[in-house]
Length: 239
Image: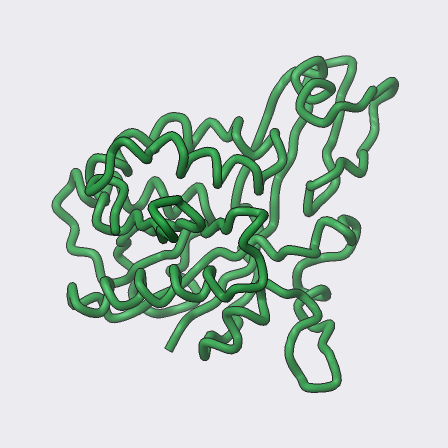
């Protein structure tokens, strides 16, 4: 069901999402500016899975106008949000659904619930006449290799030909194909103090740092009192 069907579970569902993301991800300025309108405009694509009345998984997406070419893909998560909201407000007809996030409660892993969420979102998209389903994936294990480009990482495969990454494999098993890196998917800026709080680290000098949960390096500039993180994700398309 959607969160709008059971508004009393909204905070519980939000907590399921929060436990899966590093703190700094929750400080994306684009999300802060657009999420209230996403929730108003696209509630149909914000679903929860309940088990015994408890929220065990959830996910959401946004409808966007995309012509099906690589060149017309958004730069990633942030631009997909902007394109969805501003397209809706400008009366632009969407052609595609972009999965934006899926989370499964930590005590309910290994049950295939992420696939259940993705399949339901895709079903809704196709029933609404949307021609394409895409996603700017945040691969599960990429944070272990923050100095490796996404283009290289996606080429790391197991003997069966599938990705070493569990989240990419989930989509591959559903028939998704890799389109390419989303090189500027999310941009998060803050003061040095902000970043020290978000990362639970000390950044004593100006340089790039490996930060737990970050897929790429974080640039800390102490002289300008600024931390900058540009996250690279991976675009995939479902059949």
